[in-house]
Amino acid sequence: MPRIHTLLDIGESNKLGDLLSNRYPSSQTELENQLACANRDCEIAVEYKEKLSKHIYQLIDEAKRLHLELNTLASQIT
Image 1: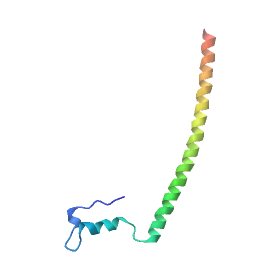
Image 2: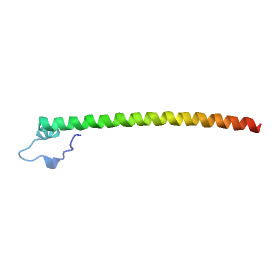
Image 3: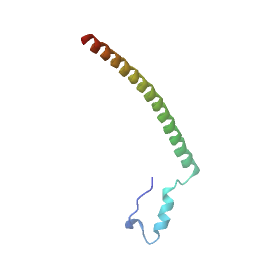
Image 4: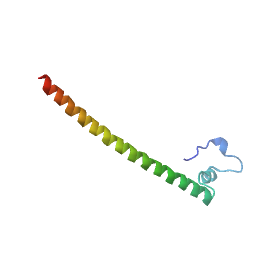
C-alpha cells in the first residue's frame, strides 16, 4: 500500500522523489515474506470458496425440497 507523504516529510536533506523509494520493500527476504503471506491468503480464500460452494449447493437442494413440499401441501388444500 502506498504511503502518504506531507510537506513535513520534505526536509533540507530529502526531496519528495526520494520518499517514493521507501514504499518498496528493502530486501529480497522481505519480498519473499510478503509473497509467502500472499500465497497463504490465496490458499485460504480457495478453501473458503470451496466450503461456501458446498454450502450453497446444500441450500439450493433444501430450497428445492421446500418448494416441492409447499406444492404438495398446496395441492392437498385445493
